[in-house]
Length: 283
Image 1 (cartoon, rainbow, N blue to C red):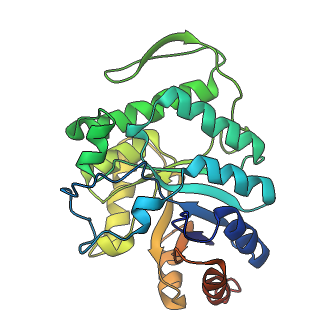
Image 2 (cartoon, helix red, strand yellow):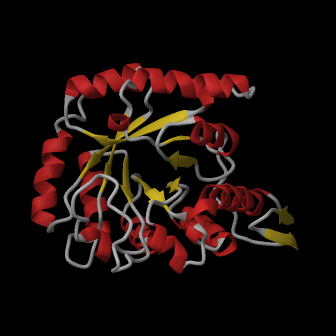
């Protein structure tokens, strides 16, 4: 099982590219960041975890801009989103941004995507909140067409374009024609159906499942029922704790990658947590 990291990079905290350099030097496999274009000051939508919304949500950088900076200063570490809110993004523009980033980083992009929880944020982008799941689905499917076809077209409820050319294409690899796409979501039949249909894998927070083993079994049963090999549904677990026994248990369940959290803080503080997390890399 690989060990990755996630951080909220802001204008008040360590630069994402500096953190990427430090993480790569210690041997971590990947570095992720979330996305919020803005946070409406009305704060009607409650913070999903409960309590006050942390300050870093208001100040986070654009993921693809800072991932590009990190890619220019590193050579091995994978760079990803956990998660990007693609229902709020133009899929044609985003497809080009992701492909360009993948080319410039030599194929190191991992795209975690999510439905989004902030109703007011979605509304500011013209997205009807109830439509966000199907919008996300169509946006990803349309992006895959742009990534994999020399002449792409797409016809859906939310995305539609006739025969177009778009380059660059992402870096092709034997095991993937485009950057891997993971759905970050709560467990459930609708999310699992989406994971199986149009994702390379699932990006859960295991602590939201009362029985994580049973939840993964349900996902794999959904894949089998749809005619997909369950082994091709990869799992990246978010919110991991630096606990060897816990990580071993997730690895035994077939988790491909666990993402450990870093503080949205200055670089010296981040280095201390990196050093602590790095003790797990000899597993």
